[in-house]
Length: 165
Image (cartoon, rainbow, N blue to C red; front, side):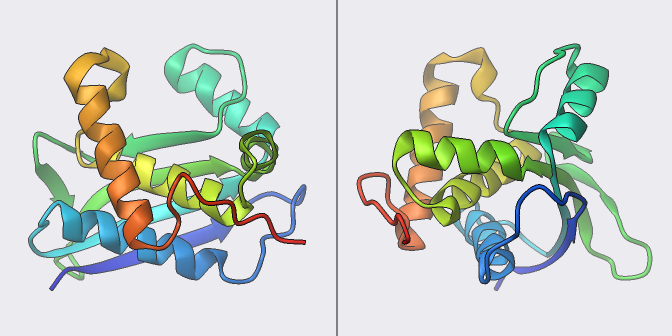
């Protein structure tokens, strides 16, 4: 059985984080590791930030001076990860989500904020595990299929709308 410690922090004030989002993020992280048949214990950090903060990070680390929805900062390469000396857990890396952007995209795509944050979390977890859609082709297709498989397993399929009043 896969064990993962997910450290979640809210570093923004623009959007109130709905009840259940933290549990959803933990479930998403666990489901990705389960799908990937990850061996051992893992740790990941997830931070909620605003558009201004993510724009700064995107500019600094990717030379793109625009806000984005999510950034992934892997701590491993080719399946080799740093290990937390105290716990023995593999440190997968950091996920940074712009909650402002997630709200906008949920409205744009006609689904719930939960579905959008779930998608962004799953997407980033796959990046932390070495997947890269930026190269396009089969790699991008394989990543999208894995994202949708995890979200469907968690009850958040693409074709469903979970817009909450």
